[in-house]
Length: 151
Image 1 (cartoon, rainbow, N blue to C red):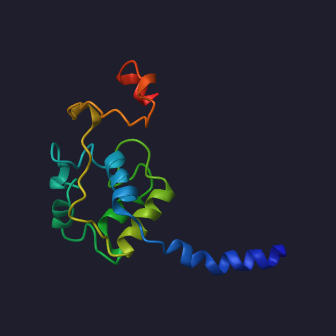
Image 2 (cartoon, rainbow, N blue to C red):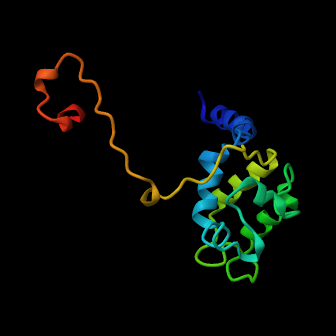
């Protein structure tokens, strides 16, 4: 395949590749957790804004306009230049372009936020549970203690 043909193929397929559905739980929620929850979760809710649940995030009119990222206040705020009075996150570095593009794509695709997706609790607040030792299949004589099953 010639380099020109390859380039034309990539250019032709680019819109289809960029239109891949954005998975909220795997891609968007982690951005919210890292960049937004410090100020906009159940504890603080600065500006009376919470982004930790679907109901709260969509309560504020115009914040997230499904299908219209260009009209969404969230996108306006995260794309403002560093040092602007209204830029979000207000502390630290602005979101990288890859993350703002991801948020735009998610909103343009309808801002799908499944009802059963909730932020994970920090591991330190989870009660520890003892794992079930895996089956070793016929090698029971080689197991002297529970740890041997994992090794």
